[in-house]
Amino acid sequence: LLAEKRRGEESPLAGWIRSLPRGADLPCQWSREQLQDLQYEPLLGKIDKQRREWRKAYRDLQTLTPGTDITAPEFYWALEMVKSRAFNAPKDGVAGLGEVIAWITCMLILGLLGMTLVPRYQPVAWLLLLLTGERGLRRFVNAWAQLDICLVPGMDWANHASSPQVVNIDVGYSTLFRGFRATTTQIIEQGDEVWNSYGPRTNDELLQWYGFVNDDNPKDVYWYDDLLRHVRDLHDVEPSRMQMLTERELGEALDQVKLTGAGFPKEVVQSLRLLAAPSDEAAEVITGPSAMPVQETRRPERQVALLMHELLVAERDRKNTSLQEDLALQASPTRKRLHPRAALALQFRIQKKKILSDAIAATEGLLYDA
Image (cartoon, rainbow, N blue to C red; front, side, top):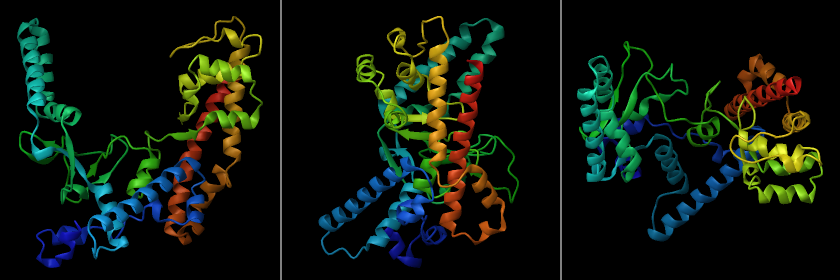
């Protein structure tokens, strides 16, 4: 990318290179004060790791190519462009023999199924055969083949949409045609914006690697690092409970916790249930992916609902601003005078606080039920 950029107008990619942004202004370039505006610790650790890795990559470049005239800003710009615009494709542009054989086998099975089923079900089988044709091969390749990353000028112009209702094209590598294709099942008029999906990305990923945030992103979550530490900040945890967590292999569920608007995952609830149950009933809490307390009383359920509510409220109250204050700022004329990074941080933390708010409401419903 840098070699073609330095060729200027002599490069056959000059027009595309001119269309690239001068920089994605990713959070790894923000100051510590600007990052604090996110009000979200889990992402700060990931950004610190990214900075270390990118600095090491530049040092490695200098070591491997002594006397290189590529500057650090140039190198980081190229990293931003590749990370935010690259696609996956099989090495050498073809699928391996194993992937092709697996795909052909599936097609034969579906074809035989279509011929042997009673007539009224045959159209369904043939429809499945058509739908899993070339796209099915692509999925086999993406799942099993050794992939490379590549830049595809023009294909990277489509912006990302998190909502399936907005996405109107599908971009991917076609092993049969040995190239990238953009396909659509919708009518796209001249002047309409073309939307692609970069995959099921949370706002953490979108902000860190692409430099933007999607409002009401259905894939967004709120991460907790070391939820057990948060529990200990609120309550003393008996050593016997810690031992039980270890013995029943429930402690790992609290290391990295993915919170949604519906609340904590089942495995996390089970770990919290063990910590919250009264001393005389803790031993009766059973384990497993769908484990529920075996006692007839509803005390443990109320206790775990209380603990979850306390954790969520404490996390909300740790923020420098409330959701209501942030929404008011977003709707006020003052927002137009914010620095672009401050405005993006505001948008990001509003989305995270909405998840917290929804989860708090969900746990309040549990308290009411209990």
